[in-house]
Length: 143
Image (cartoon, rainbow, N blue to C red; front, top):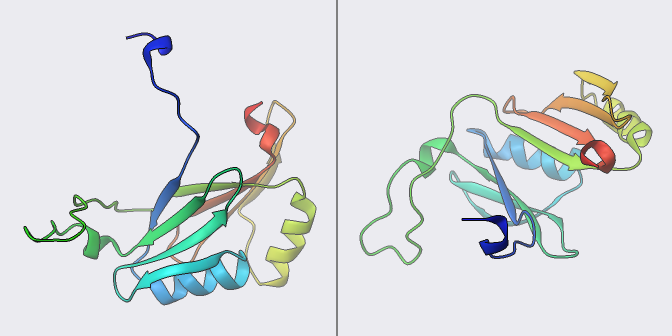
């Protein structure tokens, strides 16, 4: 199959991270990162809006134990089991990494790395409360 035969994609719609402590994840993603939580089920998940344009993009944060169980045969939403162990990675794009660095430091968030790639684009790395590797990068990282 060639690329010409592949139907078009619009981009990433959702990405998932896993965190056993969902209240800590919510406090971080809302209070530090400024994302809006728009759906949650205690003990199972919290979903956050990243952006609405040009199409919705969301970050799904799941409790890994809750998503590894197969759905009941009569489940209204028969989502297959999924999950991950160990730290994951999630990258957000920004054009003002200096402002992000100041913001994160003001919230007591340790910067794990801050550097420029061979392309000249810059990335900042930090950890969320679950230990996931979070990157904020200039969009030109992939240009």
